[in-house]
Amino acid sequence: MREKLIEILNQAQKMEYLGNVATYIPELSHKNKNRMALALMDTKGNLTVAGEAKESFTLQSMSKIITLTRALMRYGEDFVFSRVGVESVDLPFNTLKSFTIKPNNPMINAGAMVISSLLVEESFETLLDYVRKLAGNPTIRLNETVYKSEKSTSYRNPAIAYYLKDLNNITTDVEETLEYYYRQCSIELNVCDLANIAAVYANNGIHPVTKEPLIDLRSAEIVKTLMAVCGMYDESGNFLMRVGIPAKSGVSGGILAVVPGRYGIGVYGPGLDENGNSIAGAKMLELLSSEMKLNIFSY
Ligand code: GLN
View 1 (cartoon, rainbow, N blue to C red):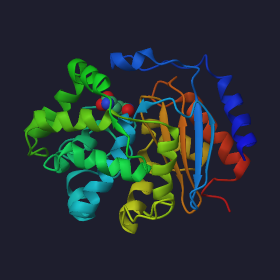
View 2: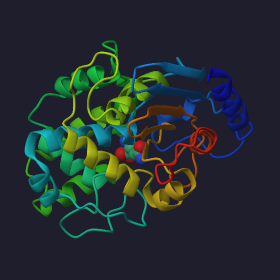
View 3: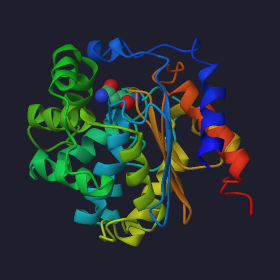
């Protein structure tokens, strides 16, 4: 298995020259495009890794599936989806244009901020603790530098949040909500942690190693569905057709992917395409899917 992953990583490495590291969050711009990694955990808890498995990066938009999970478990699907939609949108993740009151889905920033507003009364530490349990890694922490970097340079996210407040779809304090959102995006981990988190979703909410029940069945089901529908932004349909695995990307270059009942996958490559998805990461998932027959639409 490890040889297969190394072979896939080598192929992705050839794409190093493609794409750009995110620069709109200045602190992300220092990342080295040739540092890539791939980790796979099966539902028995066996972990296989290739590449720079210890290279750390921030969750960014991958955090949106975790906050959505918490909101679903806390408030139930009827309430959550009275505030945010479940349809894909053919516009960038930081769009202000696509919605009137209800953001299209919880994976664009607007939808994610509505979800953050539902969780803001829980402390950020509660979320961080939950991420640590999902990843089976108590050492995961916030990257203060990335957090401050985004907070001090983002004008778009405050615009979205204040717009939602005006529409009464954020009812909490806007600055506190933004604070929570920037922090959830700045949780730092590596591909092994991503594979662990993804494996919990693959294993219907039970951590394959610790055996701790962390997500109820229905919430895990909904989150995987939305990963398939809109986890890769305006490239979601194309990605799903090419790869056939529900996945969620972040502008740090990470992608978390879930093959239900089989594998949790984490990939990393900081060179991004114009949609903000990791080019090498998507390639690794495509190769992995065809090599290991992971397309969920085939059997
Ligand atoms: N923190 C980033 C932002 O809000 C997350 C975006 C992303 O990963 N696509 O812009």
